[in-house]
Length: 355
Image 1 (tube, one colour):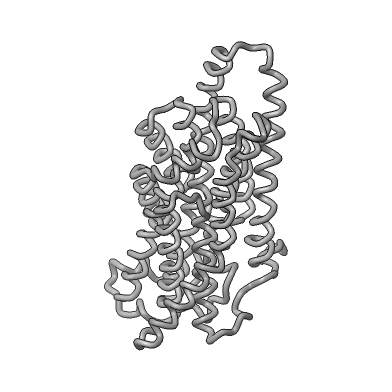
Image 2 (tube, rainbow, N blue to C red):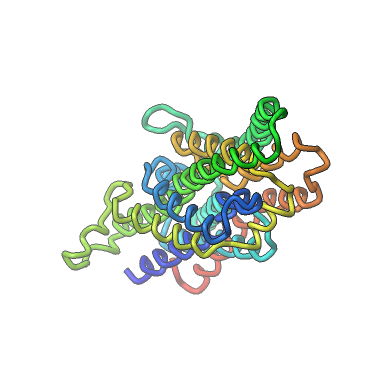
């Protein structure tokens, strides 16, 4: 029971860090365009993150049982995977780099699972099918979207911005800023909602996996009657778990994440309200589709590349490609670095007798 409580607290710490690390995903553009003050934008993001986190559990199921063999997963495995994600998130937050919390968690969990299985890579579900016959596993749910979603974000953002440019080119800047300043409130809310619907579910899946693991290992056999809700003989995401993760992510979002907000909202490209609207709308649609399909998408990839695409239409040189290069390197290293940290943490725990 003690190790479960440690895992639960660690998972909620990750969720909180996820909230302020990825707060920039929802509010960077609305802050940079000065449609809302930072405090107003954070409040908007926290509220809609909370609402979005309560919508569905498809992504949670993918994280909890669709990527690694649950037979080799122990509480220590889950703890090690979470530590890989937490350490990487803190490093990239300190550097102001908008990296993927989703890929950090997935990388950490996969690395820890391989270590738990003594180096057997077969414990990773590369390509399988779910109960409904749909594609599942790391390739269709993680690796393929890791490449396709940035491309869709870039070209989708560029295309929407191109269409908007055709419609607004005869309007005065004052009218354009006034109209899209109001519309950006809608797109920012939609972006925050989509972020909550995808990212909050990842921690729900991890905790549900911990409950499932604890039940099967007998760790919850002697619990008092009031704690009977912890028994989870089948993988499921209970309402209390959904609400807890939603609140913690909203609290993390409310704490802000100014280093990354500055990078996305100011350093990468200068935006006006119409550009912010185009980028947020594009990214929100991509993330909502992914959440419906149970894909643990990187919301960071979606919004970052949408901003790049919008900026490129504005003027190709308007995008600060040196900053983009640093961001891309962070994306490349996320999965392997977190995998190594998760692997190493699991091995260290085993060395000291924690299984």
